[in-house]
Image 1 (cartoon, rainbow over the protein chains, first blue to last red):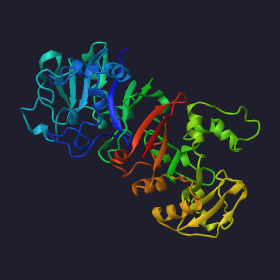
Image 2 (image 1 turned 120 degrees about the horizontal axis):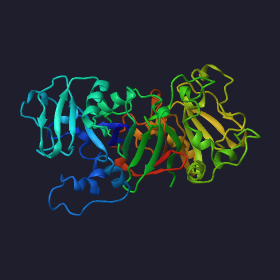
Image 3 (image 1 turned 180 degrees about the vertical axis):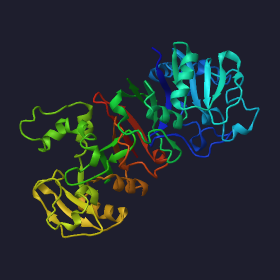
Length: 217
Length: 217
């Protein structure tokens, strides 16, 4: 049965998944790259082709990498929020095609939730961006159909993940807690009292200093 | 040199150290005992004499217990907030002597921060409650003198721990993250952006499901 999954979703100790001051030059605002250094150090990330040439070795292959790789397996579609697809105001730029170049690392139909839909954007490597003005449940129905029996990933950002959690639509949640305090930004956990009661929860810290939390039902 | 330490300070995944609705019957409000079950399962806790007779075995002796025991070693005084000493309104009850009976588990001079000081209360077992209307730095000076070269523990609640952290007065912080979402209450981490930069931070998850975070400088 097709499941709905969240992977590699990084937050600070104080629960922020992104900082303040988002822009085209600062996709995560004042958080910079600090929430994702654990992931960019892995072989999974190096294999995505997003690491520049000469940046060195093939990446770590331990626990962080094992978690990171699960991002891919069995996924047939992604749903993301408007805030993940581009910087504030991208809806006013008819030429904006996402952050990821011509071959985005999704390789499936990818549904962008926005109140201002535009025509679908076929990219290289199997990714096609579709733009939906829809509720979480409606978007999930559409994405699940596109996934053709595979799982659907909720790709973020925090508001979208929270909305899908609050609607009871997430079957597997992987959160990575990074030992920094951002102080401000957008929180993941707001309004999710007692969420753990519907899930088996595990926590495991790894030598990189992060703690992987998994919620599975 | 005398250090300032916080131990066994439990928070939920969403950062709350206490719930809402605190009262004499619910010292942690809607959080109940859930933030502290990891600790009451340890041998440390059983050795405190706070477990009722017949409740069974002597408690766990693994990693949770090792962390829990550090609460005691080398401590010469404690500072706590008014909210730890009693339920809301205890200042209006001249007979209130704390939650802990005649032999409280502190066994040192213990300074209660309150805007309404009262005469000191000597208890059994070495605890004397003193009541101070003072800033964190002033209270620490007073407690350090009483500690006679030993360390000073900041005992909570969250507002007091946060105030001491913000003032740069804490040398060692041990936080225990419990895998529940309280949704509401009093947060530990508010206003502490970049706190980690002054500390070495470690995280370790244990089989009980909690994650111990230590900040040391």
